[in-house]
Image (cartoon, rainbow, N blue to C red; front, side, top):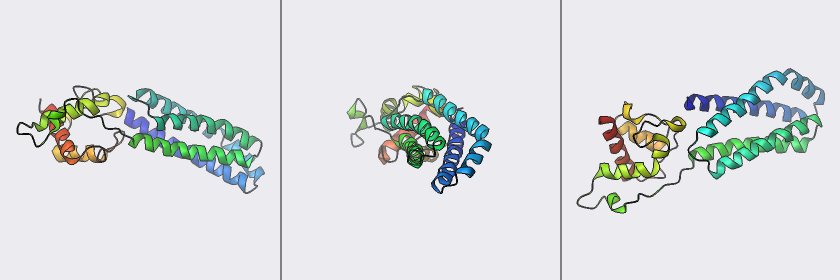
Length: 214
């Protein structure tokens, strides 16, 4: 469900930005009559797009395990841009229209930054992470990394499915595929190749494989 909402949200955001771009351009080039006609014809579609924009965003927001600073700035930017746009287009105020559009574009960029912003949580028992130790257990290392960094979305048993997280116990991916998803991300999952090193990613993949086999 979350992945579908994410794709729907991205689509309506693009449509919303296009509407604002057209209206802002018409205002900047002095086509007030054309702007008025376009605004009148686009009123209902704009209401639908705006509603979907806010609704899908709100639903996804409440499904997130945590809200980082980028997401907070995005929310503020979105809610600031809408009244500025209403006033700007109503009064043919170019400065307000431009400011609104900049805030809207900025909020989209902040959303992408929020999705990719991942902070590594170190494992509680550092001894388990020492790959050079004679008794090193790669699956135990992966389990420790998973408990520290992945439980919020995937759950302790890999079946939580929070914020679009896949059920790891029924994954059809092999170890190479799992490593690829962890490294590069997919849909709602951010990439972790700059968060974990190769050894850690490999350990996580092996632990996920062990969940699947059980």
